[in-house]
Amino acid sequence: MNKVLLSLFAIFAFNATHAQEASDKEVTSPWKSKGNFAVLVSQSSFSNWQAGGDNNFSGNLNLNYDLNYAKDDLTWDNKLIVNYGFTKLKGEDQKKTNDRLEFNSLLGKQASNNWYYSMFLNFKTQMDTGHDKGGLRNSHFMSPAYLQVGPGLLWKKSDNLKVNIAPATSRFIFVHDHFTKDAAAFGVDQGKSMKYQLGMSINGYYKTDIMENVSVENILNLYSNYLKKPENVVVDYQLNVVMKINKYLSTNFTFQTIYDDQAYKGFQLREVLGVGLSYNF
Image 1 (tube, helix red, strand yellow):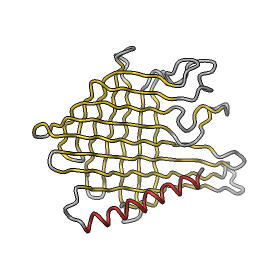
Image 2: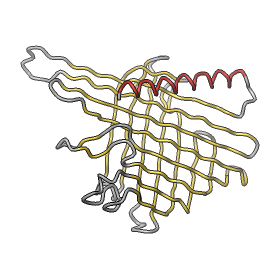
Image 3: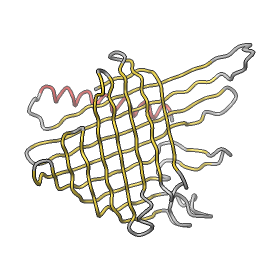
Image 4: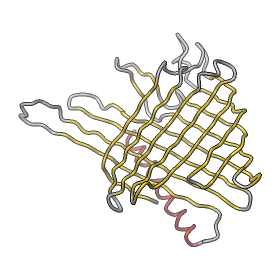
């Protein structure tokens, strides 16, 4: 799995770099691309250490890539987010600690000033198999997977500040039927492999530099299902902070919280902090 991920990141980085070179040559191109690829690692080793400790190694791979189009009254923003992390303790099997594959696409046609008629798509899942504390498989690629699509209104100040409101959003939850064989899972009914919802989606994005070489990115997704308990809003918020040390080294901090009572009765929390190699393209 790790080799596949490394190959995937290499392909994206190669294509994005060449796309950027082509964009630099053609100044009038309506396309703009930018991205960041980061590798964060940590390792601990102990020998006759009286205080105790287990040899361990952990790593995180992060890819954040934007491809945007703007010409006349049309705007089209695309974002790909890929995260994968793992840890290996001596004498134990490797375990994943982070796994995310997400794609966002937002198309807008200007109505007036900063307002646009819009159509959006959001897809997210994970790439690798996950296990619970008892070692039982509880997720894998496309189980679960979430797809949202719908028309709406976009307020866009810039590529770094925008809010999209979609009052008629279709939301699909996909899961392999072996997870729902005995009971409902991830909001999908027992014996089923897909759940359809209709509701309102609000997506916000804000990125800024709070000081030199320190950028902060905020991504907020809200969803209310009209068909069942609309008051139980699904919340997905992610904070990404990148502190550049130099051209190739940076400190990365990621915090994410999810509230989805169909998947888990409470807040899911994820935090990643590390120093490692970083490359902007």
